[in-house]
Image 1: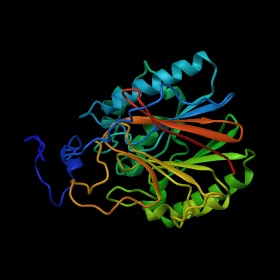
Image 2 (image 1 turned 90 degrees about the horizontal axis):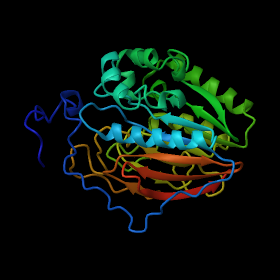
Image 3 (image 1 turned 45 degrees about the horizontal axis):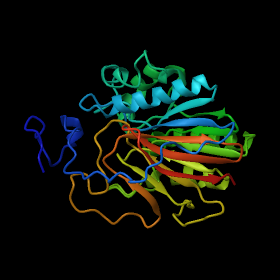
Image 4 (image 1 turned 180 degrees about the horizontal axis):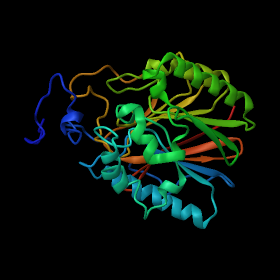
Length: 330
């Protein structure tokens, strides 16, 4: 394991990200690209597009610049074809903490670049590194109305034939009880009022993960509500890799009829970590219900939303296409 001297300050007791070591990858071995990678994704006639990733703005790396170029190019292509497109950002917009300065310096030079189309289509949610800066006050200030109501950060919108729900998992993990209940009541009402057959929800913390954290049980209640309402798809970040899970119940049981397919996409620009422990040592085995895992590659998830189905693909910053999949809504 080789770490730059200027970054090697303290390995025990203090998060390395806080000490300028977010660029360290601790010997991560990238997943070997597929030999038979397709040249393009499978399109759905008349479908809208939802594209994005999480864990983005890191001044010490160039991954966020690569994902920004990729998203901007998709937006340009879709604009020429009049394809409705929204960009999701799954939290952790700037490292080591989303202060006003770091948002301007890191996120603002890649995804927030005014020469790009991203900010006009962006629909973000808050992550733990955003929350750590005064419970997200700089985040709300930077993204304005795109971030949802100040102090809440959750909202919903329709995209093509789909209903899209953006939630604040930091309230579930760190918020006061009153804030937790308020978000849950809002979600219950939103699920009751939606008029679309198909629904996707996204928020920062994943319930399931094969990385060292092994998921975030604090979002179980959100999952319970989404599963009860027959939501089709959940997108999360937090861990710095790509992973797709089989359709699952909130208890982690495979359910091919009503189960929700969770995608974990934490590959937006922060240092990639993979499936070992945080510092590259031993880790539990991957989840038995993990259907696809990719480590060591920056990239975005592109989801095409059809009338009663979706198609998805992970696209890395070299424009290779991985893990094309899809499913009917239920």
